Image 1 (spheres, one colour):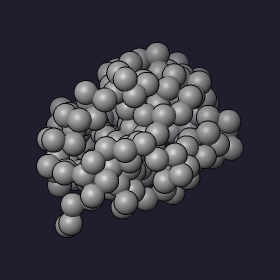
Image 2 (cartoon, one colour; image 1 turned 90 degrees about the vertical axis):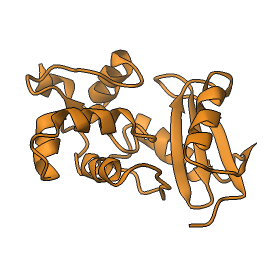
Image 3 (spheres, helix red, strand yellow; image 1 turned 135 degrees about the vertical axis):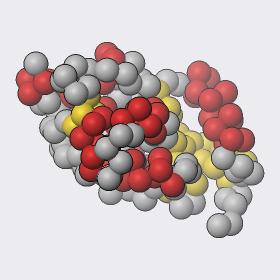
Length: 176
């Protein structure tokens, strides 16, 4: 795989706060909660961790399709995303992230159900770890994973955001 020469970002406002979107030429690779000033240290650490060498530049044109799809999602006009992704992670993480993408809008799954779905029924904690490392929350809907008892547990963006996303999708009533 060739290294991207540029890594692009844009910041958008959303009902759950600012989102910083990071993309390569191949697709969206990272979504961070918060403005660029707060996200920049995490983005730079993520770029270094994943061995990317591209220069980080703002580009609202390249990120326009994902911004539009996120806006549509928050307006209730979109239930799934079809933007290209450029994911960096272990084979196991990518397997979990793929399983998360199969959880439909307005649905939830437990960590145990995700573990069973990927054929690793004893890997519940590892599922939680992979879920936590999801680089593109919302687009890969890790917010749709809940505890086996139906409780809202853990979310990198905070439980208030998780609750807001599930409420937007109409999932809250199903959990309660």
